[in-house]
Length: 164
Image 1 (cartoon, helix red, strand yellow):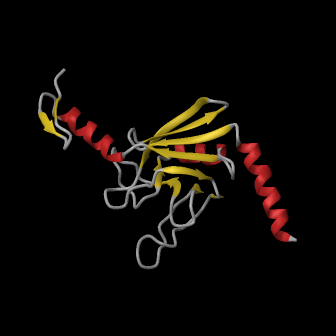
Image 2: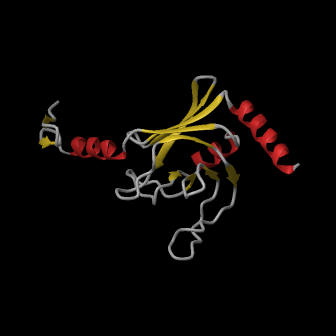
Image 3: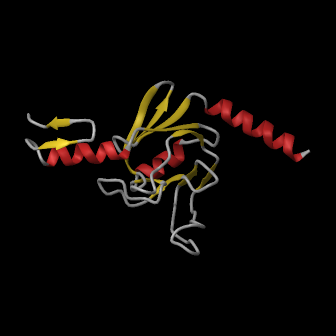
């Protein structure tokens, strides 16, 4: 009896959340809140480091928890604060409040800045779609290129010349 009620409740939440979507662009290290096809707000994020990249794909917000502690990080016993958590998977991927330097820096989660995390948490609904796209290495490459204008880089596909 409980299983059909849970399924029905989750289906209603998904239908209610269809006009809202979060898009995380790893190439820009930004997250966007869309409602009815328009961006209502956005903010900087920090995704996973090389070797612990944030996986791209289509997700749903599975759970919201205002005061959450990781059961994985730091290893071995967990305990890291992950406040304003929006769970995207049951294998360790979530959006949450955290340190957001100007680069990827997490263990795979999507960290949001103070203020932005609270706003996203309040706005997001359980069941709503979250699209994670792009490549954090592209963000780092553009950032390095900006610092070294006029330098020629070889990017494995050929020579790229950054001159303005």
